Length: 211
View (cartoon, rainbow, N blue to C red):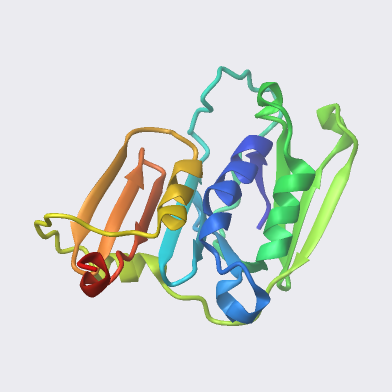
């Protein structure tokens, strides 16, 4: 179940979505980030019921700046799929502890899930100090965000939408890996950024928009 991923991509997919998780522990399972490997893609997902975000990494993705692979890193890994629900504080700690400068984007990390515990390791062979984190997964059911978006994808014409400014502004913190596109659907505004991020935000009710 071990995969190898560039530091910048693991930190990146988590950073893309942490702002969409419920910020407080009383949010229960929504105070988490779901990280799952489907055998080909790594996905990070978070939602607070008002917004949602899914950020994806594939081993063939290229960083914004040029980087040179080494001869020994086998990006990706075993096909066996896995999934873990990470407490939000742990996801933020991964971002803080592993983040490196832009020139070190492709420093490899290994990720391994065993018996519900996620192990993230940077070895000394990378030229950096060894760093290991072990995260205990939360044993609760997480909403199927992709299904929610798919079930609310009927586009409709609108004359205007009202949003909480801070909630909408969080989408500007997602890595700009392509143009941002909005699609106005029944009850949700779908937001895509490039090919690797899809999300949504619920507009304020019409009675507040008319106030």
